[in-house]
Image 1 (cartoon, rainbow, N blue to C red):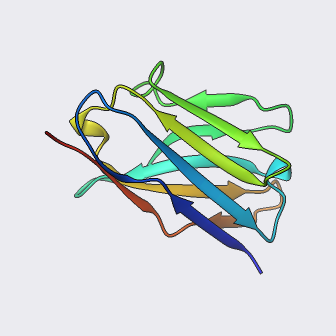
Image 2: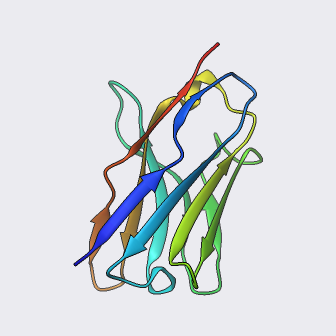
Length: 117
């Protein structure tokens, strides 16, 4: 059975940092494209960052390049998102996603990130 559990969200001042964690059980993260998405109120869910290969190739949305860093531990079967220099527009629910080449698509329950003074 697959479980994806995100944590690390919270309230932070503009310019602050948070580190999101995504602990996975039931599949091996190195065999999946692992991504962070976010959804702000009234907006569609958008891709933030992804690790898309066993070699660890990463992609980022233009809005977070240079501020966010995605990383993966194969031994811990965990995905992280380090978020620095946070802005109010980063406020959203952040979701962890695992997508396989054969179409298996798994989502976590999400963690709220609020950037506000």
